[in-house]
Amino acid sequence: MGIRSRFVLFTLSLLLVSALVFDGYLVSSLGSGLAKQAASDLMVRGALVAATVNASGNLDTEAPRLANELAAAAEARVTIINPSGVVRGDSSVTGAELETLESHATRPEVVEALERGVGTSERFSSTLYGRMLYVARRLDRSDGPWIVRLAHEPPAIETMIAEMRTRLLYGTLLALGVAGVLALVSARVFGRSIQHLTETARTMRRDLSKRTHLRGNDDIARLGQELDALAAELERSIGDLSHQRERLEAMLEAMQEGVMVLRENGAIAVANRALRRMLLAGDMIGKQPIEVVRNAELHEILRESSRTRKPVTRELSFGSIRRRRVRVQVSPLAGREGRGGLVAVFSDVTELRRLETLRRDFVANVSHELRTPIASIRATSETLRGGALSDPEMAKEFVEIIDRNAQRLHRLVEDLLDLSKIEAKELDLKIEPLDARAEAQAVVDLLRHAAEQRKSHVTVEAPGGLWVKADPRALEQILTNLIDNAVKYGPPGTRVTVRARRSPDRKDRVVFEVADDGPGIDAAHVPRLFERFYRVDTGRSRALGGTGLGLAIVKHLAEALGGEASVESALGKGSVFRVDLPASKEGPAEPAD
Ligand SMILES: Nc1ncnc2c1ncn2[C@@H]1O[C@H](COP(=O)(O)OP(=O)(O)OP(=O)(O)O)[C@@H](O)[C@H]1O
Ligand SMILES: [Mg+2]
Image 1: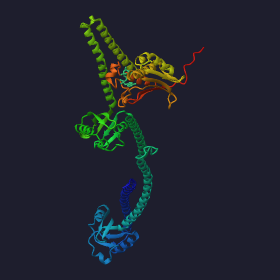
Image 2: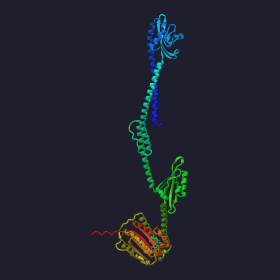
Image 3: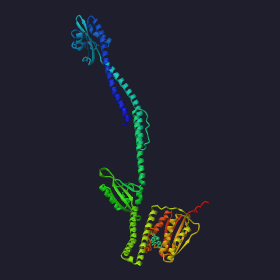
Image 4: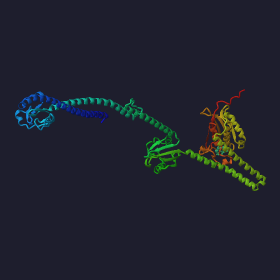
């Protein structure tokens, strides 16, 4: 039942109850008032009738006529009773019937009147069969006390009361009708605000910016204001929450680590960008991990952590073409009754592992490179101490061996220091415009002597006025290494050409080339040629005093100068080593005069 109907019903029942109580009280009080009025009226009429009756000389004969006449005048039943209680006259009884009436001396009003002069009574009349009001008066006559009694027929009062009841009923009905209409109207006004509240509250479920805008100080307005305050509070909290959520999502997306959150049922609830990239997977939300990643070990650790509710960490391999090492940390999320989801964090450790391997290899390589010359020095010095010192010929030869090995150690240490400096970017480079041809020529001149010893021909081919931006010492080291290699690894008589030219496809680059017609390098070695300690023919390189660091230094220097190093070679066809560097638009500024 709606609040409006309830209100109307309540109002109407309230009215009905109060009308019933009021009507009942009114009827009963009016009834008793009327009865009192009738009694006193009857009393007055009784007194008048009694006086008239008393004036009569012979009541024994006059009584019937007097009773009839006075009854008509007083509009009441008149009974005249003689001192022995016999009814001598009665307006309601015919003469013949009078004889049959019983003695009236015991009637209460008669008894009272005989005693006090006046008596009243209201009771059932056996003569008239109905309720009657009686008033009796005593007439003190010579033959004894007569009684004149008036009886009013109560039907007159009842009718009045009945009439009044009907009027009251109509009045009450009318009042109820009017009240009903008024209740309906006020229920409608009242209901409209309630309906407005209900509708606004319903809209708020979708749109929290909605407000009731109720003003005033009544209960409904206050309810509306509370609802508005509640919505504002909710809106603010939801805003804060979504702001936090956005921040969290942005953080998750920006993370280097892959993050996967699993629900209690094992479905993926969160998967960030790093994870999608790592697993080469598309949309994963809502799916089971087994549907998106084929990796038995991963599923095993997910199951394990889910079963034991303990964190599990393991390093796994993902991908078949580009194999990646990934450290996966699975931790249980707190949930109800020891159940709950999981969060797995994936960290790509491929690069870390690669660097670790590099470092291990590097240490092994360095130790290995150091061991040979040291062993040689020790063996030679032992021999010298063992007596070779006394033989000047042998002593000279052995000291030379020691010197050669010491030089080799020195070079190795120098090269390593150079490399580490370049890598740590600690090299103090002075980039300036350099004339490419002049620089190449200077290096070739320096190495001429060594080349001539191996009967090699080193020539320079470069146009004049070609400027390159580089550090002179770095460029010299690059070219020295490349020319040295070409001379060293080629057979005697090898022809080496050092070229410098503008890059054919990039005008802002200058390419240096060191080409030889030597043995060339097998394609299998080419990709690793610039690695530290990498040598094609270890024995031969070492025999020639090489450390295997030359090309690594070339590569790192070229990069430090903003360029890059590359090689083109095939077995039996000679090699071409290239280094391209940024070109300089013009030469050094002319010194001001
Ligand atoms: N022009 C070339 N022709 C043939 N092989 C070459 C040539 N240049 C380099 N190599 C090969 O590449 C390897 C690496 O050269 P790299 O200059 O790095 O070391 P290295 O010459 O042995 O030592 P270092 O230069 O420190 O004295 C050499 O061992 C050699 O086998
Ligand atoms: Mg070399």
